Amino acid sequence: MSKIFEKLIPFLEKEMAFHTALNLFEWDSETLALEEAMESTAKVIEVLSEEYFHTLINPDVEKLLKKLEDEKENRLLTEIEQAIVRQLRRLYDQLQLIPPKEYKAYQALIAKSTNIWAKARENKSFQEFLPTLKEIIEYKKKFAKYRSKSNKNLYDILLEDYEPGFKTEQLDCFFEQLKEELVPFIKEIVKKADKIDKVYNTLEYEKEVQRGFCRWISGYVGFNFNRGVIAESQHPFTTNLHNHDVRMTNHFEEHNLEAAIFSAIHESGHAIYEMNITDELTQTLVGGGVSMGMHESQSRFFENIIGKSKAFWKPIYQKLIDNYPKQLRQVSLEQFIQGINKPVPGAIRIDADELTYPLHILIRYEIEKLIFEEKIKIEDLPDIWNKKYKQYLGVEPEDDAEGILQDVHWAGGDFGYFPSYAIGSAIAAQIYYHMKKIMPFEQYLEEGNITAIREYLRDHIHKYGMTKNTNELLKQMMNEEFNPKYYIKYLKEKYTNLVN
Ligand code: ZN
Image (cartoon, rainbow, N blue to C red; front, top):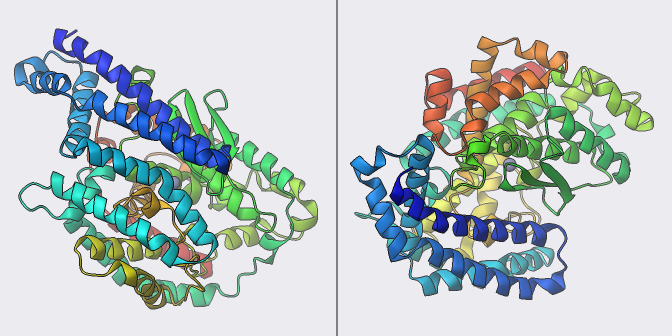
């Protein structure tokens, strides 16, 4: 082993410990912690974040990093060590240009802002959240400017945190294509799909039975209960401490059958990715999923491409009926498949169907760009938001809670995150067409053989963790980098079939 890399290890281990603790607090705040605890937890997070910062950003690490990047020294490293050095450089550059005081103040703000947002949302009042949001945006702009070299587009810098390698220019082109092709297509399909009857979905479904079925279906698609736990939170999410300790959540509503089922499959997709990362990477800097977009590609692959197909439900639909004989006895498999895929334009992103979903992301993308190109006043956001919803989806949010305040991301400072959802869907479609070519995909699903599909994804994506970037993984798997054309093709084929 390189002597210099050996000297870096204590820093890496400390980084890992603080990072893990911070993730665990985040998980705890969303699941079990009481509101009374929030303020004192915010204090703990503030101290830990500061320690995390100093563990990474200090002259010793900088010296070691520079030496390890030297070509001669770098050649002595294993592939994994090289990946760790690259990732450390990325983190280092993200943080070192930010004055520690400002970083700490920002972390303290973020620790409280989600709570302020949640209350504002409860009161349906953007005004209540406005001062905090403005503060967050100011910090994000300031930080992006610190990091911006040669007048780089600020939004490009935000994207780097979630989707390294993707630029605004490429995304502009992607979203423009989506807008052009999908807005008219959706109008046409929605009209035709109006006749699909899914009244069954809003009958009464006992939460306890839902919990049981969702747990079962997570296991069915491949969630490994020896490596992960499932809890409940307001919004389902997944986080990981490492590949042997993955945390996911779900949320249950009595009058919505499909919400929890598809959240369970979606979050299981995220969890499976993390669980399948090779043990060589456990608790290292590269032991997680490679990017938000790649992560979303896996969750959406499981949720939509597998989970909303007839082949997937064929062997297990009877089990669902057995859980809810009264509600579903009269609902045929065909009707259920049409129901779970029925496109209905609405105001809420997380309730959106697969077809209208990308338009929700398009709206957020356009707004985030307006914010960071400093073309709008933050005060005007609700109006801008509502106008875009009317224009693209033909719906008008009833209030701020249903409009501008619906997502937690901005309250957490996560600007530049939303595009990952659309990138993920597009990657999922690209992988789907590739897999259909090389294996009897539908047949596997009909046989209940999810393992064959999951193992392919493990061997070509999951196991690598962050040692290869998104485009390297795609290229290695199918000889082509990210290409959004499959996504539009997929949506058009699927929905044309659904309504005809
Ligand atoms: Zn997700």
